[in-house]
Image (cartoon, rainbow, N blue to C red; front, side, top):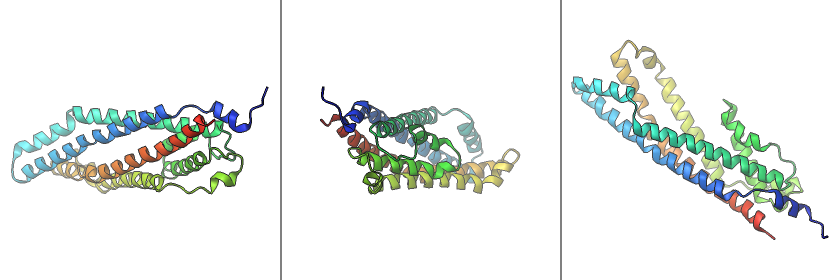
Length: 238
C-alpha cells in the first residue's frame, strides 16, 4: 500500500471553506444594507432639529418619540449586524483550523484566537490584524507548510490593511462623538436643550461610519475570498 506524504494527509484533514465564505459575504452585505436605516434616522433627526430651531414645538416631541420608540428598520439592521458577526467568526475559525490541519508550522495562534481577539477590549485594536496577517500568509503558502520562511515572508494584501484601518477609524469616530458630547449627555436628563444637542451631534456618526464600514466590509469580503480560494485549491489538488 502506497504511503501518503504530509501534504496528502494535510489535504485530507482540512475542511471545505467556500460555504462559510458565502455565509460571510451574505451576512456582511446584509449588515451594510442595514446601515441605510441609520442614515435615514440621521436625516430625520436633522430635519426635526431644523424644525425645532424654526420654532416648531411639535418637532421636539417627534424627536423624543423617534429615539424612544422601537424603529423596525433599526432593529432589522441590528439583527443583520449580529448575523454578520456570527458568520465572520465562523469563517475565521474554519480558515484558522485549515492552516493548522494542513500542517503549516510555526503558527503563533490557534483557530480560537483568530476569533477571540475581536472580543477583548483594547487588544482588539491590534491583535485581530496580526492574526489575520498570519492567516493570509499561511494560506498563501499552504502547499509549502514546512518552513517558516516559506510563508512568513509573503506580502500581505492591501485589502487586509485597508479593511482593518477603516474598521479602527469607524470605532474611533464613534468614540470621539460619544466622549465629545459627554457633557450634554450628562445634562440631558434635566435639560431639554442639552438633549436636543446630544441627539443632533450623535446623529452625525453614521455620515462618517457608514462609508468607513462599507469600505471595510467590501475589503473583508474580497480578501476572505482570496484566502478561501487558496485553501479550496489546496483541498482540490491531486
